[in-house]
Image (cartoon, rainbow, N blue to C red; front, top):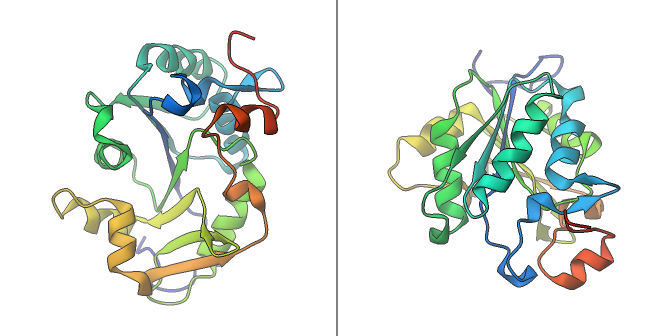
Length: 218
């Protein structure tokens, strides 16, 4: 179906999810953020499990540093989760997050309508937060294609993109989502919210303590 030619009210959207989990976690002393645990489960498992009520047609994880450990976790999840979960390895993760984004969007296989691009280290993002983004997407004005959560004027994550935007990004060599949004602010809908989950992530060892997380060895 055409994406965003009119408001999406009452239209079931085929949701794809791209999870970025390629980082080195250098400020954590070198540790895979996706495998930090909360309440006994890894952040990756918690996030993917929470999305199942939204019936995603595809979930793709981009790995990089610690690929073997993260891919082993994905293989375990594949045994528990009904919806498709795959991964692709960024062979040059030191090139930064933009390289993982580009690799991820070129590796998606499903016929999705809307793509959620998520970080692996936001412990408080769950189905409610994603559903709120989808509700905003369903109410977009004509010409708008992206839902970006904004908390106290700070950009948050995850972000929702229409399939049309993804197609346009893919036709432009080396283009990535952040640059595209900066170049086309008129198509970005800022979802103003006070939900801190959209801006809480894990960058430092103090964040692990503050957010009540544990390492996978704990």
